[in-house]
Length: 296
Image (cartoon, rainbow, N blue to C red):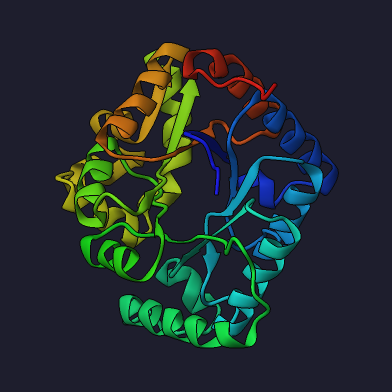
């Protein structure tokens, strides 16, 4: 599957009005980015429906769920949905799956006590269901939303790779060491095209504040060496600068190179603030510094 070196992750690709999503997807494809990534959370479209909207609106660009929530459908439905998009759009869909977060899962009435065991059992059930599905060639790659070492090991052993979110390049280096050389590693990287430190960090903190209240992200950052003081108040300057790249196009491109040099195969860029038109404008400005060009 060709996802290229640079893609785009945007929350509104799964949430904004369909007409706006189609327009933005076509514009991002025309710029030359390699993949579109979208999430699944309260208020978004169902993951495979969102993927179908993006695939139908474009011609070449890859589309990945980032992530499809395992608590939103059983494993048979997950496998069947991925197979359906893989058959309809050969080589263009990647299935990112994840355990989500305790507060969101408990709202659905599920028990989040053992997320690693739940993911392992879910992958077992997906594999069992494969025998009943029509063959798809190439099969959509399966990526796990893996942050900590044990989930990364599961991504290495039971999937085609990992799609980490809300991580600095230091995490990418550690993830590559665990995954080994043959698994896909596609981290997300948020950015702000703003060179004033105060304004850039204000936008970054507005983005980060909610994520820092989720235990998975907070615990992963602690694992990387950040303390509780770093996590308070939307994030210390040190944490903000680690999670959100800001500055001019060259500064953001330098952060992308840090991920690639650390072992990423692909970096999914998330423009801030989360407005589709603003995001497309920032991606247009950023493309030359990244070496992103339209296909000829």
